[in-house]
Image (cartoon, rainbow, N blue to C red):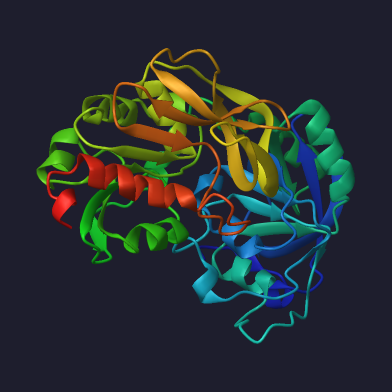
Length: 376
């Protein structure tokens, strides 16, 4: 791995390490996973509250540029299984845990989480007081950090020099380089890959042939594929930095049904003229309550985003879902074009399945607006 080292077995007790936040707050721990040549890893520190599904979280491309701190104390208990990966490899900068399991117990497991991190070149730090860390990030907000085996002064400088995610196009580093097709369903969907998860593709495959295209694909090329609908995927970072995607979506609206999830929701909002902003510490977890305004039902949802669409900035769209924790806009439906989106993850992976009906709504929308839909 180009000079990288791994800890003992990738899962055992490693050398002493430190985690330093950009404001100078320091945490002690031990290195796990891969150790970079200079003993320093940087990124934006965020916390995730899931109690299981750590592998799906770590392999979600939406975490590009970030260091994931798990609030649940025991991580790695059931090991790693290839079928649970949400992408070909992790894109996160690193992982922070309180206690990384050394001996997983699960018949599906093929390796420990520590070995998985080491094999993919992902650094980690374990033994951290993640309760204290989470309380600090809730009060001060997500911020750049540095961790590793280097001395404290070196880590402090690295944390101060880490730019974070604002204003950076992280999508370009996770999107596919070439189009590819999955599924063989009767409808045809073109899915923009801003960092798409495999579980999303599995849901779309159930009723569609899905052409997955790079994030910068021009709208003309999308329409040339004669899709019944266009899907806007999840992805990492600041939506304001992905201007090429916003421009493409603006030209597709009204020509074909559109469904967006997470970053796709934010980009749809921006294409409709809305404003986006960065949340203090984001939504990362599998238990966020969201009210569906059409029925007043409450859905427990899986979430992973640091940015949101500002309420009241889109005159030609109705808010369909609202986060009950903090009032963040969780869903939009365009009033003058067949387009809708949600901020959360209806596919789960990991998380509850309360919102999977949204994929059926996308199918219904496509069939209603497709010239061939009535005969299918």
